[in-house]
Amino acid sequence: MSKEPKVDRQREHQANERTFLAWLRTSIALIGFGFAIARFGIFLRQIHLTMTQQEPPTHISSGSEALGVSLVILGIVAIAWAAWHYNQVFWQIERGNYQPHRFMIWVIASVVAILGTLSIPLLLWRDTNPTRSNPKQSNPSNLLSSGKR
Image (cartoon, rainbow, N blue to C red; front, side, top):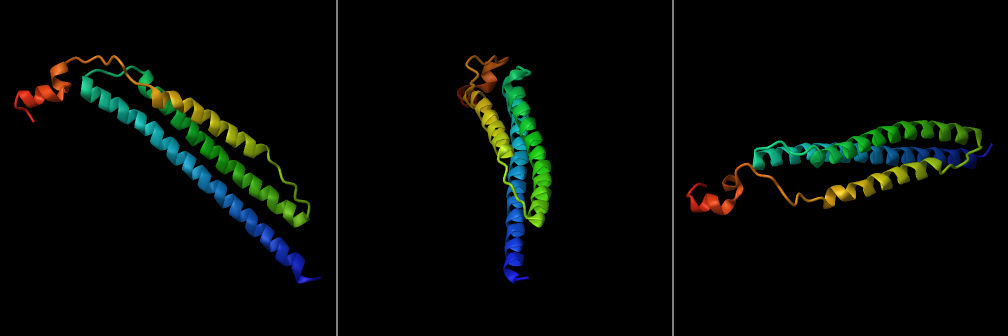
């Protein structure tokens, strides 16, 4: 038995581990972005409440919260899939019958593209007719002219 097949197998296992770690980093990023997006919706709701002294309409932050939760779930699914796939590839390398599969790559890429597309309206949405209970309180020029700072 020569050393070359053993070295090749070792390199294949190391490549498999690097791939798993890349998926793990991607999953952590998805979870982090999802958490930040969901919490940003809560932040926007609090800003709206502070500025207008009124509860914001439910559609202001519900989209960002739903998108954030979707990204967190996608990150968790990606971690589970990465661990399962790592184990499958490990045993394929050991048996010497590795077969690459691209299905999950297309699934994850499609879901992230769909979620990214759905976030565009959240980025572009502007409240063109804000309702304010006290316009003097939210207008900075009124605060300056009244001497309050």
